[in-house]
Amino acid sequence: MGRALLPSPSNGGLCILSQQNWTLACDDRAQGEGRILHTKVPDLFSMAKAEHIPATFLHILKLPQTIVLLLGGPLAVILVSGSWVLAFVASLALLAALRFLAKYPWKWFVAMSLHTDMSDITKSYLSERGSGFWVAESKGQVVGMVGALPVKQPTLQKQQLELLHLCVAPEHRGQGIAKALVRTVLTFARDQGYGEVVLTTSMLQHSALALYQCLGFQKTSQFFSLKRWRLISLSQIQFTYCLPSAQVSQALEQGGGL
Ligand SMILES: CC(C)(COP(=O)(O)OP(=O)(O)OC[C@H]1O[C@@H](n2cnc3c(N)ncnc32)[C@H](O)[C@@H]1OP(=O)(O)O)[C@@H](O)C(=O)NCCC(=O)NCCS
Image 1 (cartoon, rainbow, N blue to C red):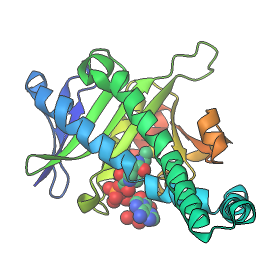
Image 2 (cartoon, rainbow, N blue to C red):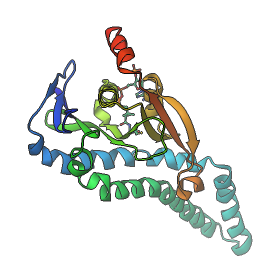
Image 3 (cartoon, protein in one colour):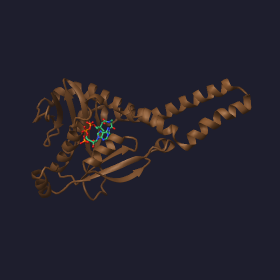
Image 4 (spheres, protein in one colour):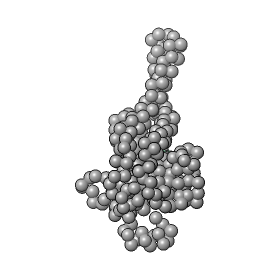
């Protein structure tokens, strides 16, 4: 039996979402969910980010500048010292440095998030109207999560809600949990009067890219948000979902859409 905790649109409290194995229903135990929000959610979040490290390492290994470095570095050592052993050690040291480089952006992102919005989920996501945090559970374990915060940019033409930290535990993937969580955010955004839902992911998160495209998000930009991402040619991709007006979405709902 799976369940997901979702905020009631009126007060940002927590509710339970289930579908098939799940049911959709509001839950008034919001205050009792601290254990979930403060221990299990950060664990799942950290684990989901760490799983991108091998793909990032492979991505770095395939970069032209890395190939030059991996061939040229040890060759230079052989030419200078004449030692194959030293060249082998240099290769290992280079690989270790590249592995660290692959790990660094993700570890940095987790540390930064756990010190900012994720340090107190109740305060960041559940204390104000217009934001929310959803947690999918199965047999007492947190198996999925997603957050949403308003984008605070006064120049925006449409009110935007940013979807953040979507992830599902590996053993529960392919069951439609992420789809259900994202759809819950879309419905929440529409009910709250937002015009768009935006999110940022990376070019290496292939499952996420497929998920957002299959749900109707449009790719709006591709960029390097920070030097550390540019250094390893790992671009971020922004997606936008334009929410239909209330009347159109009512018609869509009747027709099986959002
Ligand atoms: C991306 C992620 C959340 C998907 O979770 P999930 O519960 O397995 O996704 P769902 O079962 O709801 O799949 C929904 C759709 O996403 C796409 N999708 C999901 N995983 C996919 C994969 N491995 N390959 C291709 N498409 C995939 C499919 O279109 C799928 O629809 P379908 O089953 O009708 O084909 C999960 O893989 C994950 O947590 N990844 C690590 C964290 C991450 O990258 N988060 C994104 C942050 S921006």
